[in-house]
Amino acid sequence: MSRESVVGVTGTASKGSTTVLIAELLRASGLNAREGGDIDPPLLDIIDGVNVAMVELSTFQLARVMTFGPRVAGIISLASDHLDRCGSVEVYHVAKLDTTRAQHSSDDLIVPAGLNVKT
Image 1 (cartoon, rainbow, N blue to C red):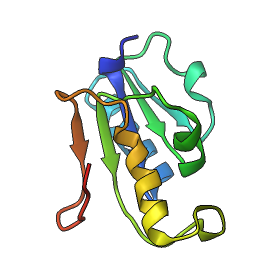
Image 2: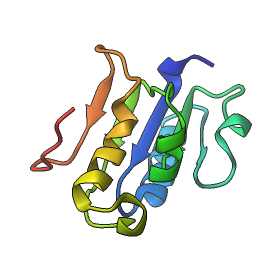
Image 3: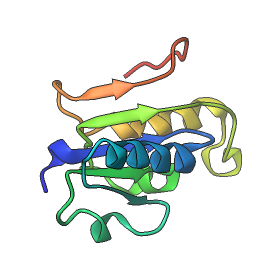
């Protein structure tokens, strides 16, 4: 499976259900899609033999993986969370942007209208 087939989803809330919903929609359209990552199963268990791997990405995962660059990344929400670990809302939001750290210039980032994201 190539990185062209990887879609990563992160956000403060609803990233798991959004990941599962998109995988369900892709399967309904005839693609062999599986979901995993921060939700079970782990990413390495879903990538073989699929057209699309939908990956839920937590802040904790993104902080440890420097070279993960999904072809498509989605940040679905940014609010206040994990302040005990990040120290401030701003640092937490930058941590979510780690989704884009290893993306190529031709890759896509999808965010809700009105969400101010600086990459």
